[in-house]
Length: 284
Image (cartoon, rainbow, N blue to C red):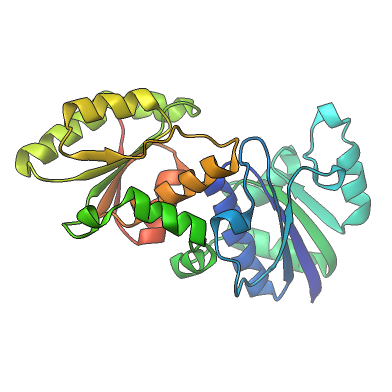
């Protein structure tokens, strides 16, 4: 085979991570070269190298500080002109936004995906997705996503020696501002009930709270001032430092004893996989 893959991972941090891991695992199985095009955008304003180490990656990494015409998504506001260019440039294309491609990208059967890429034979397949479209191992995932020096420094700021020297805290990931399903299915009162039960059994148990909502931080710290610690920064995806903070919180959660997470949030799942720890989804 002489097929290669160009992947443009979309969406938030954990969404991009699972897309990259999928493409890496698939490329290894079919013996394909992989180019990951990581673009800093308004909803993820950081490059791969800002967040993760880049040594010994099993793919070529292309980093862009802004979107370019060649990699724009399949949308009417662009008059589908980038899609037309991509259809000429690449042997085949798969995109989340195009209904006929969803069979290969969303809840895809691994052998169906494998057969599709094998059928291409030669040339390059362009993949534009935020989904896991091929299974990957936890070991591969952890090898791809290791904290950059700036992220690791922030991790140590957020989890000081006084915490690391005691029993590992329980991680809390409470997603509020941008995910309706998480808000509705994992309401704050359910987290409060879980915390109440844990603290009743172990009054000294510590918790690291990662959330995108300052009001949630204030609420839980007022209820459990001796138990909760969290980042003083307001969550932001639109700045490089905000994304470094967000990645650092993911790694802090990964170093906790376990995680209490939000429904249908890939961020909770990513942190648990990175740390090889248990994840309990709090939902009604």
